Image (cartoon, rainbow, N blue to C red; front, side, top):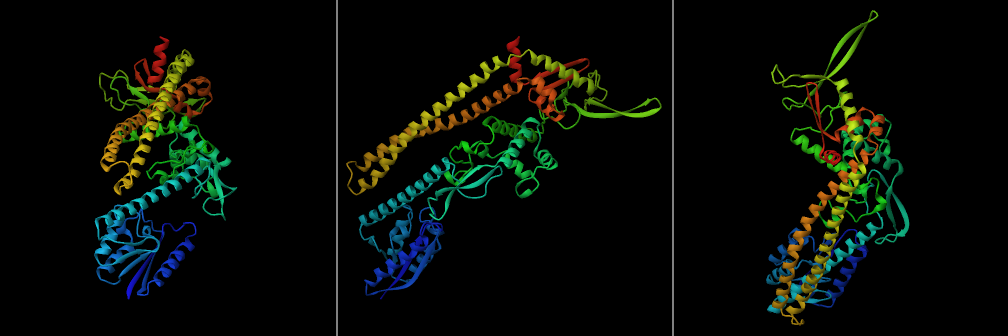
Length: 528
């Protein structure tokens, strides 16, 4: 009697009709064995939720047991419902079959008969069969991903917990995979989405860091989900997650870190300008901390230009300090606080004509000077020359990218057709020889390679252009009615507004030199 081992496999634990699939394979194998009087099933191996394409043969316990048993001559026949149950990898499955046959194990399929390696053509047929199975797995994966993509584009939720700022609602539509379930969608939650907007506003408008935002929210009575206090990690994730501009992260969609689902406007909570401004500020802060240079990041305290004030004589950043001065008013003693800017490197150096500056009067004078300067700026001219110009440049590059990707897609489709033709050519059923197909494939791959390089380079350029455009647009919007906005702001917001238009304020004896950022300088040059 020939000892028969049966292998049953289903790809995923959540596969449709999984409970029916393995019994179906088992019944078919038992019926097949009953037709062979000298066969007897001595062992059955089950693989549930094991992909025959994505999982390597060496990673599958059942195949490892089969190989070891074959070497030890523990069975004579391996029987499967179809050969793709052994595997779908064209670079592995044929060798698994060869290994078993070489160890005197017959490999049979209920539907496809016996696999042999007696002749060279047998090995070719084994390879082509596995190659086709691999192709079917790729197509299945593509169909599933395309279905998920289309569902995502329509706003359907793909599982998991709703990110902060959103809630899950159930629709009337039947789920594509389970008829007993309804399709769900993700939509902004009114209360949480307003907190998300507030977090972005505090980060941009007031230059608050993560901890300060958390303190502000908790102290002002805001609460997170399940009435919990806010924590730094939630604020950090909120300021990094592209879902708030309609691009939900979905790692498995393409398989790369940072991938997002197709754009979905219904998920939007903040504008692209706001989101990109936050990313730019986060990067700038990160670089400043790395280089131990906090230029342009206003520090806490009463001084309006803390973090932006520098000594004109030595270039050192001025530190803020204060002293108490006692005054006698009609017999009552009052303690007055005097705030000052001070150069930390001046120790009697004769090059320093001055080393301390009274902050209260100086801050007021500098702010009045800034207001007078900004009054003379032509914001409309700035929008016409800078904002619109950068927008046209950005949109032009986006159009070029779409054209290049379209051209690459056409070449890719041609390449897929040629690869599909290889199998027919190997068994003599094609009008093209393998040599002709190889030459054609090499030609198309040579066309695709420089296109891919151009696309990647253009994508990087677009990111830079997009940042530039959003940066100047944000500045232009803030400069409109700047004085009015500034006068209505509290101290934190005033310092943040100043830091966005000023690089440095150099202080000397009876002299102040205000250095604006490059965009304001460009505007000032146009006025002159």
